[in-house]
Structures are given as C-alpha cells and as structure tokens.
Length: 557
Image (cartoon, rainbow, N blue to C red):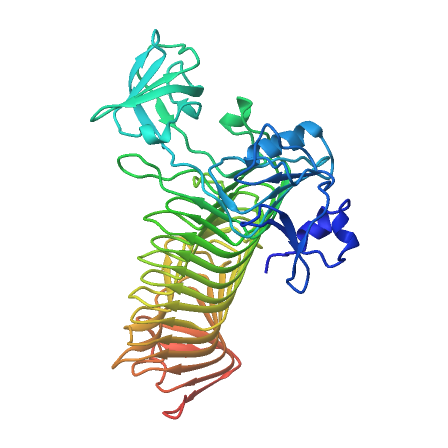
C-alpha cells in the first residue's frame, strides 16, 4: 500500500498541528467549509491551526498560481507546473510539491537533480490526465507571412491558444511553436503561431505528444526552455496517471506516462495507485535506475505495451495487477534490434497477476545480452490467446553467455497458443519455477533457427495441455531441462518430441500421455539424472544415457 505517512515523514517540520496530535497522517480541504483539516491515526478529523509548512508547495484545483507561495497551505498554487517551477527557482534542497485531489491536465511535471532532489506527493483523488494530444500529422500548408500552419485533420480541440506544439522532419521549421489562434473547417485545421516561420517549404509533421514524467533526458520542449531537466525525482502517494489516445483521425499513441532515458546516473522512484494509457506505453526506461510501486498498470486501448525496458535500464517494478487489453505486457530489448545490440540491464518485476488479452504476450524478451538479468516474481502470468512468454535471441548469437531470465510463478494460456516460444537463443539460462498450463498447444515451442548448445531452458513444475496437442514439448536445440510432471491429454498424443540435436535432461519427471512418453524420428539420447516415471514407453529411437531410471506404469499420476 502507498505510504500515507509520507507527508509526515518528509515534510512537516513547522506546524501547529503537532501541539494537538503527534499522530498526524494526512491533510485536506473540507469540501463544505473550505477549512484546512487533518486526520489522526484514529481517522478523526481535526482543524489545522497555522499555515507554515516549511519548503512545501501546495497545489489544488481552486488555487491561484499568482498567489501560491512556499509553505502556505491557505494560498495554494493552481497547477503542478507552477508550484514545481517556484520550487526550482527557490532552490531549497528539501522541497516538496504536495498536490490535493483533482484533475490536472499537465505534461512533464518532473524536477530535481542529484544535488537538489525533486519530491512530489499525489494525495488520493489526484488524476493527472493531460489534454488530448496529436501525433505526427503531416503539414499540408505553410504561410510565412500570416505565420500559419495547415494540416488536413480536424484536431483544433488539441491546440488551444497559448498551447505548444512541435514541428519535426521539415526542411527548416523544426522546433517548438506557441499557438496564437486556431480554426477549423470541414477537413483541415489552421494554426496561427506567435513565432516567425523560418521556411516556406511544405513538409514536416506536427505533434503535441509528450510524457507526464520525463527523467534523465532533455526533451525537445526542455531544450526550448519550457520544462526542466530532471535527474533525481520521486513521487509518492496514491495518484493516477492516464494518457488517452491521440485525436488524430486515426487515433495513435500519445506520450509515455513515465519516460526515462539517456542518463545512466538518473534516478526515479514512483508510488501510484494506477498508471494507464489508452494506446502506447505507460512506462519506458532505457537508462538510469527506475523503481515503481502501484496497484494497477493498464494498457486499455487497441495497441501498445504496459512497459518496455531497453539497453542498460535498471528497473524494479512492484505492481499488484498488470493488464494489457490487446498487446504485449512487457517488451524487454535493445533500442535498436539490429545485429550487435543487446539488453544488458537488470529488470526485477514483482506482481500478483500479469495478463495479456487478444493475442498479446505477457512477456517478450529480445536480444538479452551478456550481463542482462530479468527476474519475474508473479503468481499468475496469463495469456488469452498467445504465448505467455516469447524469448527471441539471447546471448551473443552462438557465444556462451551468463545472461539470465527467471520466472517464479505459474503460466496459463487460455486460448490456442503455446506457453513458451524459444527462438534463436545463443546463450544464457532461462528458468521457469512454477506450473505451466495450455489448452490445446505445446507447453514449450522450440523454434530453433540458430539456437546454440550454450542455451539452457529449465522448467521446474507441473505442466499440462488440457485438451491435448500432438506433443506437449518440442526439444530441438540447446539444453532443455525438466523437473516435475508433464501431462498431455487426448488420444495418441506424445509427451516430448525430440526434433533436433540438443540435449534433453530430466531430473525427476512424471509423464502422463496416451502416445510415446518421449519420441523422435531418428536416434536420439535423453539424460535422466534421477527418475522418469511414465504411463507409456519411450519411442524405440530414444535411449536414456543418464544415471537415472526409467519406469513405465499405468499407475503414474
């Protein structure tokens, strides 16, 4: 649960409330009287006397940016960005921006450096939901004299006077512009800007997308001086972040909720109730150290990931439920997927449930490099109709690698796909400690295509194909190690099919099936270290060369 004592622990050093109660928990404005009150540990409402709260900048929807001042809980700021900017200008090393309940249509609320860290508290009831955005609409007209841009899309609602947008990909007009006025006819939007337009060439793209929080890199808007660069920023409380899909004629991805990149020394810590996007990516990290705690991480629209971690990111996620309605929950990869680029970072993901629907994969790993480590602790990893986990190209393409992936938890595929897809893995260890269940497809689908004997995939748990598949596991290349129980229901279905020259290693395993327990089209060996108990015999092409025993009995359960 988010820490409700964060205000007490980090902020309150000068307040009259301490004379009444040492069990101060949370402050709030009384909706009926407008008086400032606080709750003690017995949930009793008490009046607050005094208004000096140290280096704290209070924000509320009914505040006034021109009247807000540090430590004053009566005269609050109206916008988060104004309070944040004042905190930066004042330069205190222990500043806190405290946000009262309400909806805030803001972007890039971050601030803080290693010398002067930024801290923000989002009280319960805070929703940060930026206004609707525009993503990459081509310019259809440029008028330097009238300082006007034209686009063939009806997006005037996303371009109010005084708002900012960015031109990119143009001959000479790339940059940030301020809207002076905007109009719209049946097919086009006309934007008059404050600034001069340097070039008359009609090309380039107009966008307003930007993240709610950006740490470790300078965005185009930061370079233009509109938002501050942040290298050390922390958010506490129970706020909600929500990025809605763009208002393009064909809705597209908006900015990221939390975007972290470039600076390897940057630090972000975030505590929220919910982080969500309608399309796109709620969480992105390619550099620095990110720690996030939340109740829900949700991609609720038609395309996107719940999170993507790339290059050398160091990420720890503690989230109760992670849900992607249409796509991949997590995509871990290098920024560039071309040869020689790999993920060398570290990801620790703790969750109760990770779920992908409508053909999405809960976990996709591509090009896991030498020092890459991914550990997932999750009670249930659920896929509606695709692989629960896809591992594509680990190690360094046929070079032994110490990279490691470990899943501690159960995997369930409710549709018609296999649970685990393994392809082009040239090194490292992949380990599943938990039960794996599919409906009518393989537990483990070893596609091969360059897998190397240095790769080891270990499944330690009970595995079942509920309605049955022709074989439950395909063992092709690398080393596949099994421990637990394998059950493939249906008439004539095999347990394990050895289709390549890789090693099949069995510690202690029960195989329940109606066909061969282990089959192969040509002579293949299996290494049984301890015991293999099966309802059906090995195929004649399969020989145990290990020290363990093989027992055949219809009583295996």
